[in-house]
Amino acid sequence: MMEYDAYREKVERQHNKALVEVMKDLYIKEDLGPSVSAKRLGMTRQAFMHFVHEYDLKKLKFGEYKKKVMIFSASQMVR
Image 1 (tube, rainbow, N blue to C red):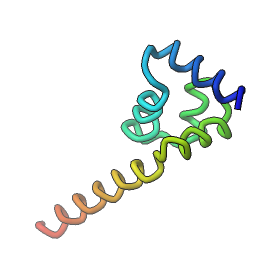
Image 2: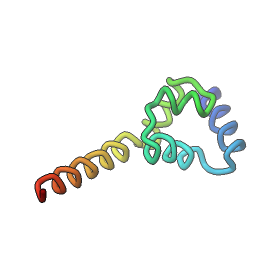
Image 3: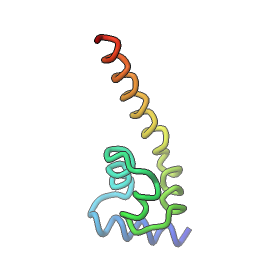
Image 4: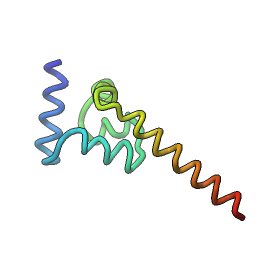
């Protein structure tokens, strides 16, 4: 757990905001995968996935994806 706390502190200090917010920006808003996001944050993929599970970001990411697909599908039906 000490290793994860070090990653959290490092990222929060660099970005001057909470880790969960930084992760939402990369993983959800920019729609980057865990490997690319982890690399950008300077942590291992394993540590990144630890935080994804801790903050329950998979539901949020794939909930957004589902919305996009449904909107796209609806717009295709209109044509």
